Length: 404
Image (tube, rainbow, N blue to C red; front, side, top):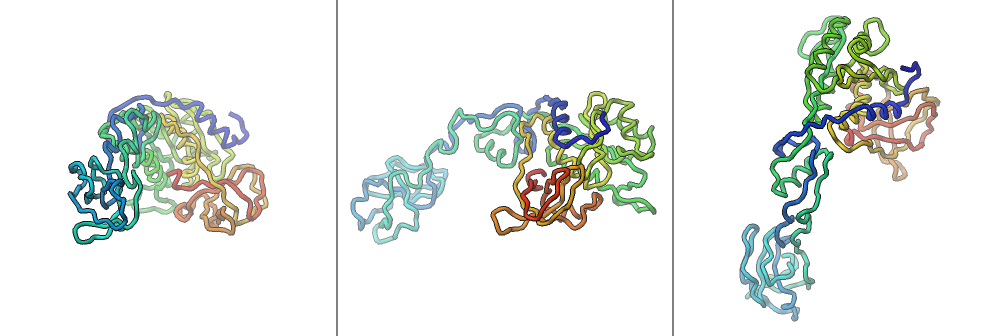
């Protein structure tokens, strides 16, 4: 491995180039499929909707009967959703409700606000045209059409779409099991008293939440003491029981940072030290054929490196076709004389500016240990390495809502 810092783009390219999709397929109920990745394309077996229906509450008419603006048309029937009506008698109207089937003989629905109730029936106040306010059969989806392709990661709206087609179970790629290992004698699980010099574990809880949002299974192996033997044993256990491994801490250059040494003894490292801030000590390799991601110990660095590097790699391993992180333009609401040699990810919030492009305001302290900055921010602003930033300059912004 080179002693030079690896740029983020090169690191990501290396990760995606070395990750192989798991490829195992399982059949699950759609109510358990949100966040998982489709293994087979889904086609519509039926038209949606399966029948012509009313788009609103009103009156079903035949427009040929409207040759007199003052004509009174009697109401011959009422058609409710789920109850097909009788053929419409010419010269009459049918009271109809949203979603109800269009009876034969009718060719338009007049919304009830455009109708006056009078003795003997109703009078049309606004002349409709044929087809008005009618949702035709197959208007949303036609039978045989492809609705979702293999590799698509299912979201809540996709579950609704599958249900609308009568699909109750789908084939998905088996969700990965990801092992999380925390290192450090100073780390204590929440709920226990703190001794002097100790702090509560936040990293494993944050990582577990991030992984669960991807629909993955989490195996938390606890906090490992700072010894080479304990670190090696934990990594071996993780490689034996999980599809990939994530550690936090222990990948820097301190004398008590044993993760890197343990990984090289059990497997190999192909990435170490990136040109990213926060998150420089990030490492990547393999243990017994399982991908290993070594994240730094500071929580903000854990958060940023997971989103920028680990998340795309896990999505590929899960079989997802989505690759690129979507960014948006934002104007810097600050100035920086020099950013150094690492690409920086600033925690910011957006506000409306004078132009259409919003203004990004950074948290007042960008230290990588400040968890509060992550809950304050609504996204990350990307500052390229080696560049000065002037107020008003347009940079890339990554909203959390697109990453979490």
